[in-house]
Length: 240
Image 1 (cartoon, rainbow, N blue to C red):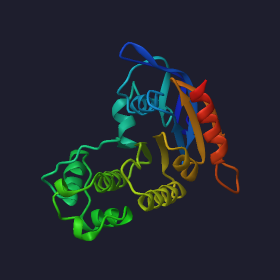
Image 2: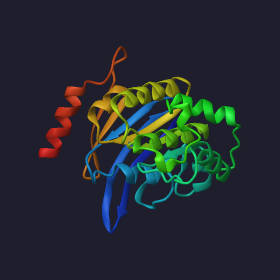
Image 3: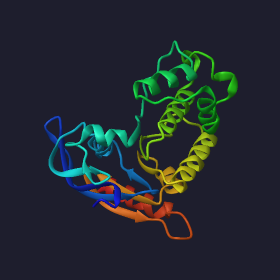
Image 4: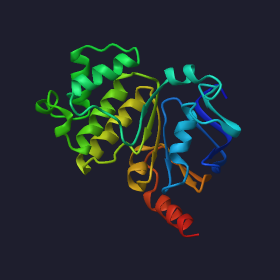
């Protein structure tokens, strides 16, 4: 399974004494955008935490570049930049200061020009970059968190509801950015409940329901995944 950037092999994981994932299997190739789609409690975040080595499988395995994430936690995390749904950033610091600080904790050095280039990529206005983040909207904070993930320059991005709090224009910009990253070789696993957004950016979508992978959708070679087909499957599963 070494040819895959990420792979779940019959993965079962408990949280709070209950199975949050049941016998889930999928692979994500290098340079691919794979979206896990599902409602609240479907097991999306549990999947991400498994690849970070934070949850011990009851059965099966989550692998990063062919190695067990649980058994090789440090090695797995070196390959990953993780963006949680609600990134913790310090309100008394500016965007630039937050990014510099968190990069230093990860042992990564980036100069001011590189940080500003990343903030430019996520379309954070120059006038806002030196302001304290206590003045930021949720969408602005999310942009800073995305820039921080990009500056890690890890080959694999794990994104938990990455467009939460962004306006429609910013979401379109984000989708373009993720597409560019994938074309440059980055691997992206994102989890979301947004059917339309997943279909816009992903080359494959896995549909999770109550901890089980109940369907996988592939984009055709000349287009995007059919939003209507995915929505119908999502709604049908949710109603069953």
